[in-house]
Each structure stands twice: as C-alpha cells, then as structure tokens.
Length: 247
Image 1 (spheres, rainbow, N blue to C red):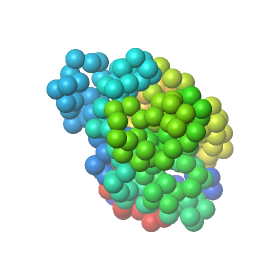
Image 2 (tube, helix red, strand yellow):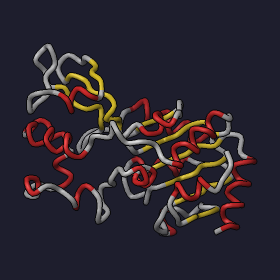
Image 3 (cartoon, rainbow, N blue to C red):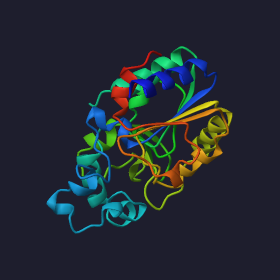
Image 4 (tube, one colour):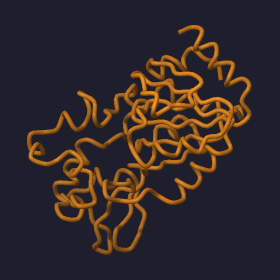
C-alpha cells in the first residue's frame, strides 16, 4: 500500500491538468448511503416502499404518476443538508485551490464537493441543493421541498416543485456532460474514485481519457474489462488514501 500511495503522490506532483471522476463511495464516508450495497438505499427501504421497484422510487414516472410517494421517499432518503464533507472532499478542494486539480466530475447529488470548497464541479446527475418548478421554471432553494408543509411541494404558480436531480428515465444534463467530457479529454491525470464504473452512461465518459496516468481508488477491485488502461489501482477507502497524501 505504501508503494502505491507513493506512486499516486508522484503522479499528482507531476500532473499539470488533473481531473477527478467520483461516485457514491466518495460520500459514504460522510454517512451518505449509496444505492446498491447491502447498507444502501435500495436495501434499507421503509416497509411502505417495499412494494415498489427501487429504481421506480427515484424515477420520472414515479414523480409524475405518484408524486406523493416520490416526495415521501425523497424527503426520507435524500436529505443531505446536514451532512459534512470528509477527507476526500477536502483534499480535492485543496488540490483545486493550489491549481493542480482542474475539475471534479461527480455522479453524486449531495453537493459535498462544493461544501468542501471545490468550485469547478460538474454534477452529471444533478443536485439536491437545487429545485425548480416544473411549470414555470422558478428556482427554489434546497430547503423548499424538505420544509414544504404539504405532501407535494407547489410553486406560487401552482406547478409542482421538483429537485434538480437526474431521475431514472431522464437524460443527463447536456452542459454538465459536455464540460465533463472536455475536462477528461484535456487531463494528463485522471483519478477515478468511489465508483465501480457500472452506472451508465456516466461511466463511459472515462473512455475519453487520453492522458498519461489513469488511477482508480475503490474499496473493491474493478474487473479488467472496465479499466484496461489503468496505471494504478488502490483498493481502499478513498478518504484513507487521500489522508496519506499531500495536496
């Protein structure tokens, strides 16, 4: 492990355009559950939701057809307002402040990278920190849905206020995707962390990397067919790995 940490430090020190691509494993160390593990959202549903397929509860269909169910589940499981960044978020923010890290591409929707101080964050699955009216487009803060007194949050125009999160059945946001791909193409160092690279289409974006070093940091080993170009793989909690590095 020490040799791998030293090699990663060398890659970071030599990099001029580093990019980080992260998934749920970055935030689990802050107490945010992932989706598919034994302790994840899908395997720890309230009895009221057991009759629903896990993906349905965070789908466009559920939002439109059964909004009461959607918002009840959302309020129970997706509130990250009191969650604090961990060592991984803070390390990446420091790398950016020093000019080494040029972008964070994240599949997470909790806003913890920004809370840690990162500025150049591309949220390819959206964020729970933003809400908007489905009818008039009016923007609402993160608290609105969670604090709304009724079952279904409503805008002053009468429309339903929804989270700015990419739900199942919806397309990823064009601007975030375009900027993410552009950053990955420019990178000389791409660090992939806290993701198994199985969520598509987001995972496919790493294929655009043509730089010098590709690094994967994930608790579990990622099969060769998903990372054939990897220079370095570290199977350990990402916060622990980043805590052993200097920005």
